[in-house]
Length: 387
Image 1 (cartoon, rainbow, N blue to C red):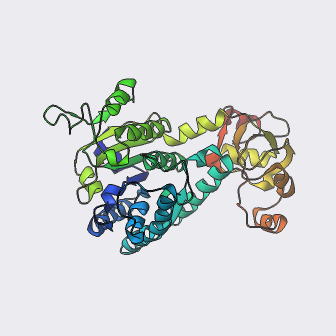
Image 2 (tube, one colour):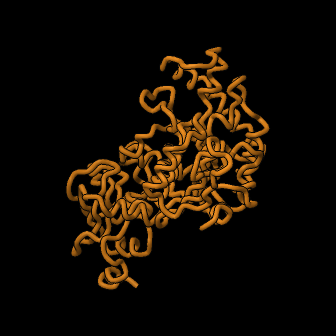
Image 3 (cartoon, one colour):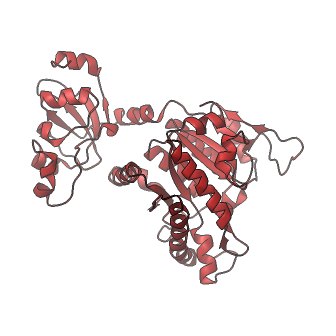
């Protein structure tokens, strides 16, 4: 995926970030209906090509200001939060309406940027995303501005889009802006000499310095936050495209050769995630039987039925080692249950878990996407009698 067109063509999962200035006409506080409908036409087109789209959208505050008659200009925090609370309902309605024209369901997810700092909340959010995407739903994500205090600042949804891309193992993130991409000089200050950079292999100090000198897209914090978001996504194996979203059908325009800047990923999303998990210090250990080990060697998730012992104390979302009765730790993964819960459900069938715990539960103790081998699985499989 070394060009903008090939990135969109081959993307398995793409996060699309939409700024408030694209979606809402701030002068009248009204949604740009035709622009949104054309964008959702693009989203439906992506799905028809086999790509899974997620949307990160600003706009709730801009819509809410108009509805509450708050006008333009600076507002105290409590009025901004009130505007977000009112506007978010309207924003979700518009997305639902546009998506249902294509028989697609919308889901509203409100996050704060610190979700990735708490593993339990991270796992909850990630599991929700996966469940929605498995059912063909299009998630529409926004900052939880109605209750956040320190998250309402320039550029948050660029960074939020990167967090969503990392959380969902996306391989492409598209930041729709008001310029054609990333330039060596600010095109508004140097319209004659500024050159569009169509491809950035690595985000260096020089690239970051160029972004700092730009005043483009000031309504959302400038190019700096977009480069920061691209850097976060790139390190997780996700490519980033910065492109002009003011035109109609901006996604198909890019696919057809429209201008934009592609920031190449460093590796792939799954490998980057596995490296992150492998670097964690295990909080406990699960002892599994030979049948479970063979299932893990074949890339399956760890089910409670295969667990025969639990060592240590850990919470949901903590990293735990996994090994057989006669082996050291062979895998490391993120547990979906606490150590106490694991002791209660180990050896049991997944269908029995809700009755044992007294609440709905997930089938896997450790999902295969949240687990990575610590030693060569092929050699271990041979040693443990696998095929």
